[in-house]
Image (cartoon, rainbow, N blue to C red; front, top):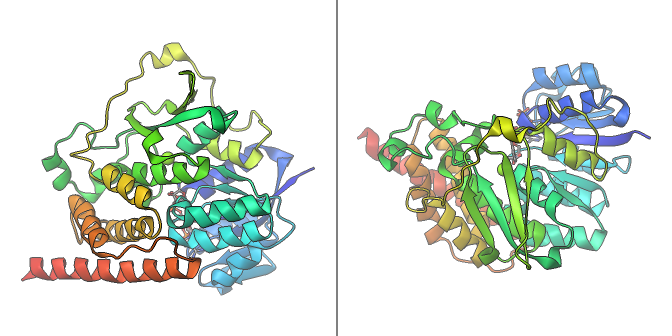
Length: 383
Ligand code: NDP
Ligand code: MG
């Protein structure tokens, strides 16, 4: 029987790759719904090819063609994520938009393939607790967590998670090089082709910071037992250590098609979009090194926020996201992203167990304050 799937964020990097996987898998999936932001041309192309029963966009719903059920805004996402026809929902939108639809899907007992990392960074305690209460499976799409998911047989016997990081475009560059980096240089990731926000986060290693927090929630692991190792080839996607010292790693060529396919097909596996067979001799060498915590300051900040828990990771996430947007608009420099985030992070009072409404309130306030700080800096530069 075909698995019915909805994709939230179908026009983005993960969303389009998911549709490539689904196309290759032929009759395994039926697209129930596609949701996107404002890229109407792309979603119209996707409608013509995949014939979803429902479509939702954040605006310009009147320009959507080829679908009889066009929804819009957050109400559209809510309708899609509460539709009991879904067998699985791929949460592939970027940013905080993913949180509410994820909670709706959980309340409706619909399994989730989760790419949107902000969901767990903002509200990991609540999301994982609700998933447990509702018997909902959250299968990670992020390649590191997908790797760990594939390695784990019994989490109670795992003593450590080892998350790999490619190191991004500035791995062997100086702090000075990073300070003067252009948007183009920050977006030139050596291994992965992703959306702009996550690509900038990969250049500062904030992405790895977010992944540490994601891993803590997904696998209920203490932060002291989550390590990060630099692995420039991105072949080992992450590893786990068992209490007896055995280490199990998941390897593969760096392609998001593989973890996307794993997550939406779980527990089945198919040949699907695999382009070629893995060969150790072709790879020849695998390098590993310790991260430079002085250069990539976000790593320590993320560990700190994660250990504090509560509102700390909400503040970290929102301040970074606004600062990344400002960098992408050319308003600030790459290293300012950290300085601005750290400045905002140190100013906000801690709330230990925020509710979802409080999380959104804190998120909003942080974004306002971050943008005030950015505007102040820009104004100073223009004097
Ligand atoms: P992109 O920026 O490429 O895509 C974001 C998607 O979200 C687009 O389809 C966009 O639509 C959609 N979107 C934006 N606003 C809304 C809205 N209001 N309602 C519905 N959809 C909306 O991001 P990525 O695909 O790179 O990343 C998506 C998520 O997955 C992020 O959380 C990222 O951290 C995570 N992730 C990504 C990886 C990757 O390889 N790209 C790897 C691991 C995790 P539109 O374009 O139409 O505006
Ligand atoms: Mg990742």
